[in-house]
Length: 298
Image 1 (cartoon, helix red, strand yellow):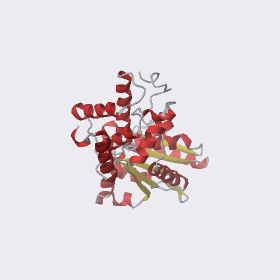
Image 2 (tube, helix red, strand yellow):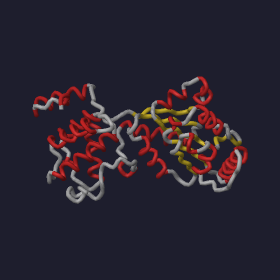
Image 3 (cartoon, rainbow, N blue to C red):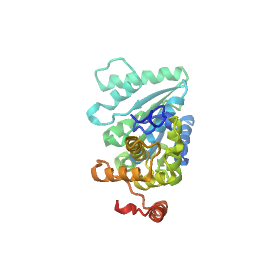
Image 4 (cartoon, rainbow, N blue to C red):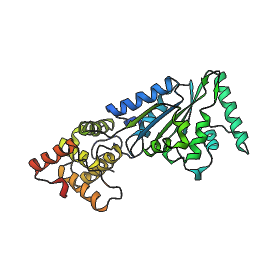
């Protein structure tokens, strides 16, 4: 709706993970490096965690786009028990079409598939997104896949991506054997203030727009009310552009940003994440001094 108004080629702040918009903050670059290292070093199990909306899936999508033909990649995104059993998920993830009526036959199909890859000097990588939704029994079954080796080689590499609750599950006594198999783990944290400003500018430029449509003051206020969580940033920035379009403005003013935040506070379903760290305190003081706006009483 507003793309033509701002001279954009596409919406810059979609909530859907899009690797084209990947912004490599120090944290996201480290996450990407950890994932690539885990894959290249043939680590048996790699675990990446982060809060909701921190950008984990976007990094995963980027990794999928750059992996070569030497790897066969399976991606599981529906990890709730209601969607079926683990072996069925894995067979679908690797696009194995043969039918099997029981668990033993499904397991044999998977073994045959891994053997064919081994003969072709290829590796299997199974990525499980939203892995925190898996129950203990399913995680135990997943652990069994890490036992599949041929001539001491790892036949299938597991990459588990999820929210912090995944770590809590893996720490339980029932999963201690699985936890001991984890070679690499990393926790992705939100952006800081400078990264938030760079993130907003980056997405505007990728969309063919003017990075200065969002001023530093607006970026600061957005950081204060999102805590640097990319998905929350996208949500506020998208609404800021929509509100500015409605006002026929070519830049996002601080007044518009404040209106968006007020709207989110009064009618929003997902709560904002007010940042109370040192950056947050400095932003609050500067906005109070320069614009006479108390961010805690909007």
